[in-house]
Length: 366
Image 1 (cartoon, helix red, strand yellow):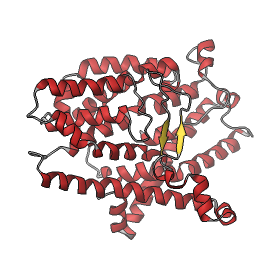
Image 2: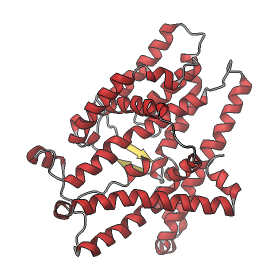
Image 3: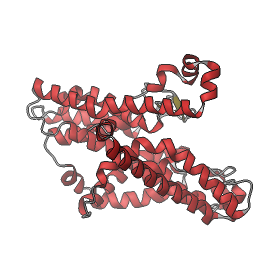
Image 4: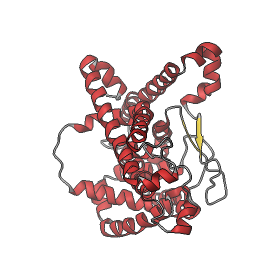
């Protein structure tokens, strides 16, 4: 799902206003990609936050100093170290593609121009004109390796785990837990922006749900399973609405967005808890795919765009006229972009695991 989010092919000349004027079928290719990249797949990262919060407090016992030390040392290995390594690797990758620029400016100047130390925390920014429901700027940001905004926000959540423990521990009166949960709910559904890179109401809400369930020994699947039918219904309705509203990229789409994502998380947990999968060992690739796909995604996309140009004989690819004339080509390009990126990434992992299993484990936080 994360790969699909980043595989979206922007169609130049297409906008939400076209939908308002021409109806939902104004461009088949655009709507297909919006449905997957901008709507359906956005339930992935919140689900990761939920699971991460739950796992942090699993087997936590009475929260002794020894347990805290063990958990935090573990997250240093599984979270902080891979975070730093992958961002540094991506900086080196960028240098390889801009050798002339590095040589002309000098390495230190080049690094400063790219953001300096902020590359490790907040050097990419988007949604510059977005505000939360309180009217505060809600600018999204990431380290130089864009998908690792999730890891960055997760590091902040781990840093705040003592606060989650104080609020949700078993010994507390129910009213304390209700107040804590209510604060998270208000922050999330109003999409409150703190204006601090790494501190997000989205991460706090889902990580917080996970911690509350884990601390009080309530299973994710059993608890969320109680919301199965309402979750399915709400998800189905809001999915259609969000697709028609271009996901969270429009005013009303953004208002509805947190409700849709919540229903989506409830749905995905219930679906995956009830479906039996053949254990083919694919889970070992998960983190590597998450971390590595950005390295090659633009290369794969460029090759596919040139292929589409050669097949159709068109010199301008992925503009509105091309997408209207060749919607199947654009959709196929999008699907292949995801599939090829996944295949190549798994092959790279397989080779790396054979050549240097220790490095592979280090990069994957194992």
